[in-house]
Image 1 (tube, helix red, strand yellow):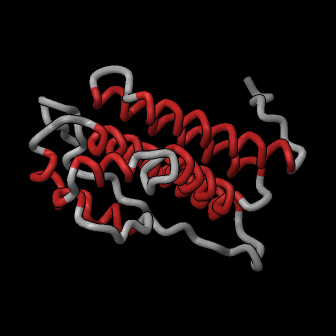
Image 2: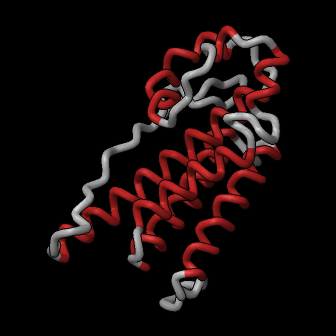
Length: 180
């Protein structure tokens, strides 16, 4: 991955891989490990890309329009069908990252958390792998950003983790890693 030096925006978005869904079939241990790894990698990619987009949309970088094309596939993958990012006015961009906006805390944290929750089903190990993938993606985004991400990204990650933790709790799983 590369970032632009003036803002730290991802210049090649991580792609989300399809996760096998074999819920009606018995799977081998190796297949289960492969699915858990896919969930972890995809949660990582979603968290990383979402944080990068939030920071870029709310940032003040005039070069953002040049980076638009690199986000097209990712934006389509997460369901964004709005006006091209590069063509947004400041008011329209602000609306996208507002409380109710597509890239706002609520909708973005729901997309991240729901990916993990839906991918994990009722499997505790998948939940843990997905949760760890979210956290790892956020850490990678901070490293590439060159420090702490914008407040909106901080809030989004906290909300997504809270949602995954609640889903785990509701299924009777401890949110603490008992192997530590």
